[in-house]
Amino acid sequence: MKNNRAKITVVGSINVDMTAFTPHFPVDGETVVGDRLQFGPGGKGLNQATAASRAGGEVIMVAKIGRDFLSSVALDHFRAEGMSEKYLAIADDVGTGSAIIEVSSVSGENKIIILKGANERITAAEVLAAEDEIAGSDIVLTQLESSFESVRALIEAANKHHVPVVLNPAPFQSVPDGLFDGVDYFTPNETEAEYFSGIKVTDEVSASKAANKLMENLGVKHVIITLGKKGVYYKDSEHELLVPPPVMKAVDTTGAGDSFNGGLCVALSEGKDIKTALEFANCTAAISVTRAGAAPAMAKREEIDALYASFYGTKES
Ligand code: RIB
Image (cartoon, rainbow, N blue to C red; front, top):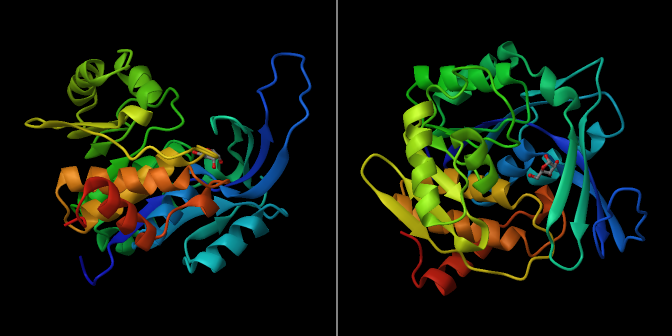
């Protein structure tokens, strides 16, 4: 780490989220009277970048937006968060990514449709424009909501400069062969773990089997499977762990996994041991679900430290 702040380069998506809070999810053909509408910045990449920045990281984000009115939502967010716009490319022929989200006003659970828009147009050259930033990062982070070309370019550049790579395989989808070569930390949730391993993940035992398959088949070194209220399961070639999370009353679970990944990257970059890093990431995610929205719901460092101390008993090391 070059200064006191962990440096994290995020290559990924920016969406504008339109979220309807609803007393129940509509079934086919049904119209439901919702409770309220929230409109704001989101996208797995921007959520993860915001989580890492608020948790104490110095974040460089490589992303792409359109020239439409939605782009101003993203730009306003970058400015409010003090995040650099230097590697934000503009697409001329396609709009800013967007997401239509339903959130249960009862449970906070969500259903999401994304429209990738400009996220799918991020080029390898646009990623490599940030190669010096990647080389100077403590860790890099990406997901599957932007172009595969951009994901691959980030992994190759990070491998070249010996910078650890965290890949959150969300949303799950068929990917080109070899896309995950060179990934150090692979961070699926249960459904993503099942999609990429072929093993249904419901508990610690099935998570362990899925993690073995993911390490064998994809060559990833560390598997971190988020299991919701059951906690987070970790496995590498020598260790395995199940770390329970603080359970909070959920208002909106959108972006909880993103929050976890942002917090994880900060903790790993700060040199925390894996158990402490997972606990820190659990706290980051737990706070985010108590608030509505995606990027705006991310936790600040002082909140994470306070929850860590009250739930895990000590200040994180
Ligand atoms: O992970 C939550 C995110 O998924 C939302 O912000 C939405 O934009 C979709 O990308």
